[in-house]
Image (cartoon, rainbow, N blue to C red):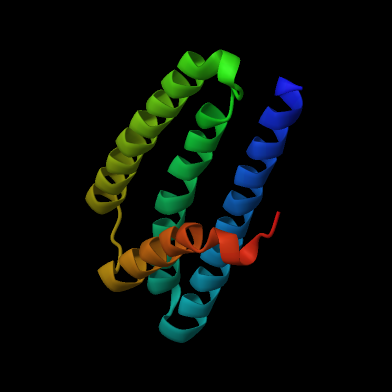
Length: 126
């Protein structure tokens, strides 16, 4: 039963991440068509900086479910959140240091993809 619950929550999280990825790609394509290649790549990079840490968090956070594993659930959530935060910082530093990006499309796509996660209950009814 625990595996069934774990898989259910993990699949819901991965479905949200797939939706965030779709929004990031659509945003990058629209920005590319409107502003050009550099802006489109910048928006794509912003979407990637938002999606990849969420994916890593989902892998860690939903490894355990159930009251009998409360300590493991807490530890995996804590580790996943810390890794997500660290990966986000590293990706921001890497992109801003080594690539020439347009900041408006980059941060706009990043914020848009993060807001999709906030409105997840609107998009997914369980």
